[in-house]
Image (tube, rainbow, N blue to C red; front, top):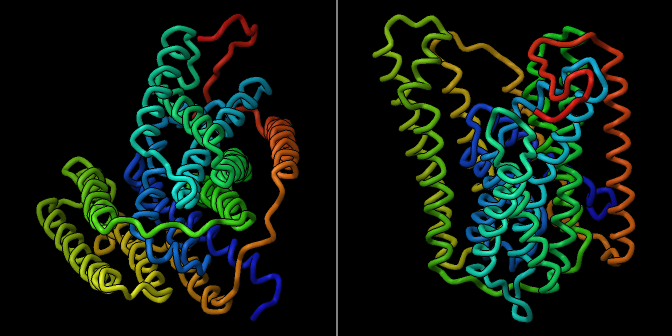
Length: 436
C-alpha cells in the first residue's frame, strides 16, 4: 500500500473530482455553480490528505474553498471562445491567451484562498476582514482603471469583470507575500498555471473536435479540462509543501459553513437554474405540451433529492459536532455532495421526459473511479518532500513560459485546420488599426 505511485493517485483523485464537478457546473454556471464545484474539489483534497487537523475543520475549510473557486464565476468568456474560432493567428492567439488569463484567475483565487486557510496557524493568523477589504478595493481599482480609464476591453460587448478578479488576485498575492504566507503563495501560483493551461488546452480540444465533426459535447470537455488541470495544480502545490498544524476553528464558523455549503449554495443554484424561465426552456427543448405537469414532476424530484441529501449531510455533521471526525465521514460528505450536484443535472436534462445517455453521464464513471481509487490508496501519505522556494520560483517561470509557448503552438495548429468555425468573432480587423 505504500507504493510511491500512490501519491500520484492521490493527486489524480483531486483532478478527477474537480474536473468532473466543473463539467457538471457547465449546466448551472455563474458563481454558485462554481462554488459547488469548488467545494467538491476541496473535499476530495482533504479526504486524500489524511491530515487530522484539516479533517476536524473540514466545514470551514471547504466553505472557504467554495468561495475561492466561486468568486470568479462572474467572468464572461463566451465571446473570448469566439475569438479562438477565427482563422487568423492574431485573433485566435488572443482568444486562447485570454482563456489562459481567465483560467489563471480562477486558479489563483481558488488555490490561493484555499491555501491561505490551511496556512493560518498559531504562528501566523490571517486577518480575514482586512484581506477581504483589500481584495474588494483591489477589484474596484483595477476594474475602474483598466476598463473605464484605459478602455482595455477583453470581451466586448460583454461584462469585463475579469478586471475586478485581476485586482482581487493582485491584492491577495500582495497580502500573502508581505505577510509571509509562502505555502499559500505557492498553491496560488501552481493552481493558476494548472487552471490557466486547462482552460486554453480544453478549448483547443473543443476546436479540434468541431473541426473533425466528431459528435460529442466538446464544450463540456473544455469545462472538464479546467477543473482537471486546476485540480492538478492545487493538489501538487499543497502536497509539495510542509504545513504547520492549524488551530481548531470556532464552532460557529463550522455552523455557518454548513448552512452556506448545503443550504445557501444548493438553494440559489436550484432557483437560478430551475426557476420558471429555466424550466420553460427545458420544456420547450423536450417538446413538452403539458408544461404544468412537467413543472410539478420536476419540482417533486428536486425537493425529494434536497431532503434526502440534506438528511445524509446533517447526520454526518451531527457526528462531526460530537467530535467524531473521521475519514469515513468526509468520504460520505464528498460522495453525497457530488451525487447531489450530478443528479440535479440529470433532473435538469428531463430524466422522465425523453432522457438519453450523454457525455454528461461520464461523471458517474468518474465518481465510481474516485471511490475505488480512494479505497486502494487509503492510508497513503500524499505529501512529497517540501520543494525549496528558489526551486519553486524557477519551476514557476519555466512552467509559465512553457505554457505560453504551448498555447501559441496550439494556435498555429488550430488555424491550419480550418477556415473559420461557426460562432467565430474578430477582436482585431485585418489592418490591426485599433482595439474596439
